[in-house]
Image 1: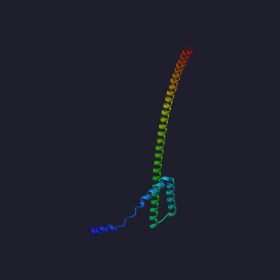
Image 2: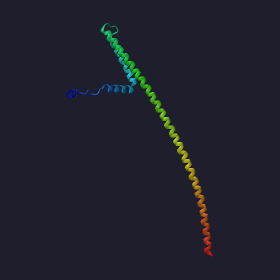
Image 3: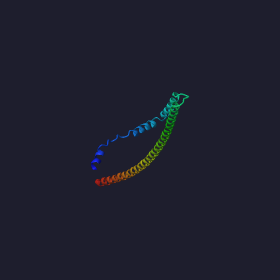
Image 4: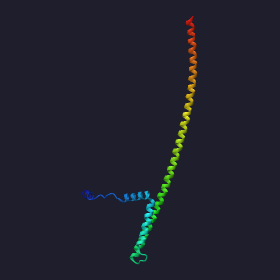
Length: 157
């Protein structure tokens, strides 16, 4: 039994990956990139089919005519639906982009304000430090001058 099972599995030819998925993705990407072109194409195909079909027909021609018109209607409706969906998603993406841009602008403004406050605080501290250093250096200069005067007075005596 195991031999026949092995024989059956070794005789199986693997199928190639379905290309239908790729075709659907390709068509969807074209529709996303060019929604108005797809809508216009659906309308043009419907008009072309309607123009090529005889106005009055019987039997097989009438059935073909109805089928072609039905397919044209489906194509036009699908094109419109896809176009609307693409437009809605585009509007949503635009709004999302605007929101993200506003958030980034607000954050950048907040960061700039914070940096400005910190810079002003650092400048205030630096000015305070310079004032303290200036006072200290003046005191030190007075002390040095006083000491120099005392030393000079002692040396003269």
